[in-house]
Image 1 (cartoon, rainbow, N blue to C red):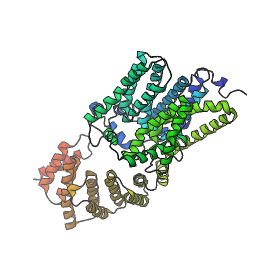
Image 2: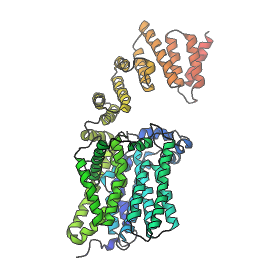
Image 3: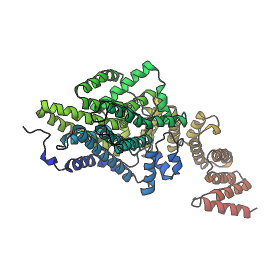
Image 4: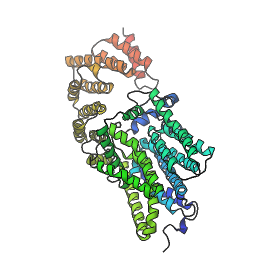
Length: 570
């Protein structure tokens, strides 16, 4: 029987890469129509559409994370095509295509398959179609991990070239690419451990002394990154919080780490069910984590190449484990964190497949076809789900019914669709389940907003003062909503009630202007001053609003007209 590795259709040098790219495009084309996803994407679009100065991107301390390479990619998205969502989704898909091709190239190098590209193609397809990768590719804000993987896989290729036959050009390329990876995402620090592992165990002509010297050179960027982070450390920095993960309660944290390791490695082997919002996992995954450690060692002893790659996949999971243990991110567990690990896991898996091909060739090929078909279908369906935000969050709520934040997102979408009662129920559930301080006020604001949407303007005001004893204590968003609710109430009043509420609104608008100096608040204050009968104060407010308003402000001309009319009437 002919070996499944022999396939004349793939003899042409471009056949396998073309097939690989075609498969990615077929599976991921629905992602082009996702648009702006409700989580993180709106903030990202607002930030970069405003054309932030480059020094805010290049210098640390201006944002939660220091990821200048990723930020530059979004910066140029605005410069080149005005943050067009379809184009940005295409960028993510092309990044995934490139990473899949890099897996193919690495597999050819690792397994010396220059003549028959079937094994490298299988490795690349396993990575390209792995359902756990959809989150990182379909989500514009998830670009960080595909971009990081681009530099890590490229650095790995040059590192293996150097280990085989030391050349300065390869080591310089590796160092540069590793440094860029560190500036893409701080979790690239894990690549330092992978470099050491490969340096110690990978075959090649490099001597022991050369390897030790090269490893020391290679980990220099990691050390510089840590020192850099400590110099610019702040308690709110994402990298600082990752570094502080070294300060752990040993016993509990070790068990939590084993739970996370077991969960993530299970996701590599069997990714279903897919879930965007994983806030907790079953403790029994810790047993899988315990069993996994000796299994990885056994894999290394039995098949050196595959073992190294499986262990590398586990090393890339380490940052995700720290996130889970320290609860750094809004989702303690996330499928997008597995993107880079799936590349090395897929490379290791086909190495194991080579051994099984020799033992059971008739069984292995149908199994691989079935595996790739299920993976492709799962990824395609997941991309379709990402296209429908409401269905997406309904799916997340069904799979994580105790996660308050997803109910908040679901409520926001329901409110946009006019399903006010259902949105109110979702916000109430989010408030009841919420355990994150950072989400307390956003959820409360949404509850107040749902009251406003139902026309409960007095109810919204009462709720405001249940939250804040004084107006000065409230964030701007709450103050704006209070102002809108009271303005709606003002339309229904007359006489003394109207005057009293106008005085109250004048106080609200004054505080708003202190917190957020928007000339529109001056214009609104002028209208309130007219209601209470203070024309001099109204004229001053109109004048100030006219002077400070942008040239295209809709109220600028009206402010000037009112001001001139009041001045003429004195």
